[in-house]
Image (cartoon, rainbow, N blue to C red):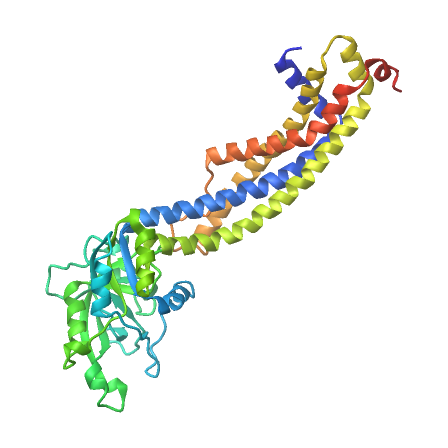
Length: 436
């Protein structure tokens, strides 16, 4: 018999007992479906994150801060504190820790570090739409041009070559400010309240030591995994104005900061991190931020893969049982094939093919059903909880990954069918022909 004939015969033999074969394929299907769908979710999430990283850029950008603040900063990044909250005069948002000029100079001398500068930490208290009464907690930041790119849903990026005060908000701010769309926000004026450090020491009511600055909204940042830090981007002119107001009448020697920003050679991240830790500092890169997001999703998907693995283990036991029963039922047929000159190797191959085909059909059905559910799931997600993320496909199928998973499942099925196939190949033809 030719190999193709053996495969065709094995596929035909599978469906002699349709119920048993169907139940075995169903067991394989459950495992393959779970693994394929979880892999597709992982592909969808990572694909979206990668697109965000490509959009934002800043591969060499770092934020440096005292090591004692590391846990607090990381906790804030994953705590959901970026949501817009109504301002409360009794609370503040300043984190106390400093970077000294001496330490800054030492970090600048570390090989692989470039353009490291003190970051202006602004004690902005609130922001409101010009003419409105309700104020909201706000945090603003300025990054030098070329470090970070921003995906916009309306308007343009801030201009650092103008003396006008400009700000970029994100879509979380539209509803609180009473704006119906990103397009409506562009051109509106907001008012920002910032603490004047020297004045706050001389007044009893802290609200009396706030300076106010008006700025124009020039753009709205599109939703994304890296645009949810809550900090609003401002141009250099506004950054300098707020900084000057904050430290008005404060001796320059008394002005400190706890964050520095700069660039790093991506090939020297490990060496630089070690040197910074020796100095008592930590830094976060774009990849660190992305890594935290990936870890969250990966932890969930590992659970799904465990369920899929357990299902495949159960399916393997089902394959062994199915083939043992098949060998038992076809004992005389095996004896006849041997009497006609079919070798042990071809009999082994014939039953191994049946096991492999059980894995193949289970995988095929798993792929088909998971793709249908994935398509439906994406449509539902875009209409509900992913409505603000139109480019985020929760489920994406990678043909290469699906082929690899199918081959792995077929391999598992082959290994499960090895023992029954060996038993069939070793049967004595005379005894097999006498079997009732």
